Length: 353
Ligand SMILES: CC(=O)N[C@H]1[C@@H](OP(=O)(O)OP(=O)(O)OC[C@H]2O[C@@H](n3ccc(=O)[nH]c3=O)[C@H](O)[C@@H]2O)O[C@H](CO)[C@@H](O)[C@@H]1O
Image (cartoon, rainbow, N blue to C red; front, side):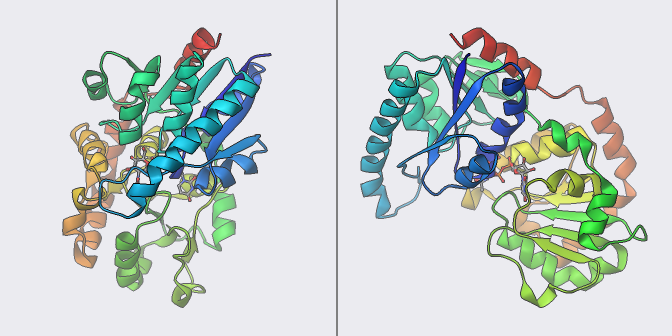
């Protein structure tokens, strides 16, 4: 039996693609184990799937000043030796990394032990973790064609792995879950896997206007539920959803979201008309802006910059999205970007030795 160790974490964007690949690995009889951080979102998600999970200590790759920047190198160092111990004991045929800060010591340890490593990058410009990991990996599988020139000849273009279950969503089940009816279209707000206070606050400020036209599902992130609107008819908040995601996406007639790579490829695959509000360059490396612009250029997405986000611009953009929804759906129908788990599985089979 072949064994694979997966890693990746920090936010769900660095974990969910691994979930998309797991059923295919299981079908081929792979034994799957996971290395992640002690407290990251990956622990809850992976342990919930009953996959053996090894926590290691990890730091955070910050681009800003924080006292922890001085202690984190020691934690990353400890993480490397812990990963080395786990990999020596487990002897996997391959390590598959989805990036995020916890993955760097894992791929470095795999390289020390000469275990083949494949990593996947979701964003147009690779994240810091995958940039650091590049020297340790056999190949970096990329999502966007434009990324190929940025990864030192190690890139293989595969696209975004999407969870198969998302294509089996049930609209009716979501309407029942939310206490909604068929009377009004459903609008889904999604501030990325950790939620977005900026989007949340704009939704709350426009809530009563929005509710005249829509029923609203709001994924607001951990600890962000607004108690004031808990029992409001036609409005349903969730912190983070697991299994229910497929049904909520199926029920959504329109989506307003951050531009995390996995999310936008899911909207594309499901042909959902959407408005993207990418995380601003002031609070990130600007990866979501690039993701969003590339989708806007293809005609798949409408984009509203965070700097211009107000109650009024949100309402105006939604009006325009609704009026032009057919042209967005037509552009998405022309896309040849399909599901990519098949391509990724071929590469895993080739390198798992
Ligand atoms: C703040 C931050 O660092 N964001 C980054 C993070 O975003 P983030 O973690 O938000 O990642 P994505 O939007 O790419 O993916 C989120 C995934 O979580 C799922 N989901 C979300 C909410 C929920 O309640 N349930 C659920 O299952 C979505 O369907 C999707 O599959 O990783 C992305 C991929 O590298 C980057 O593009 C983002 O810039």
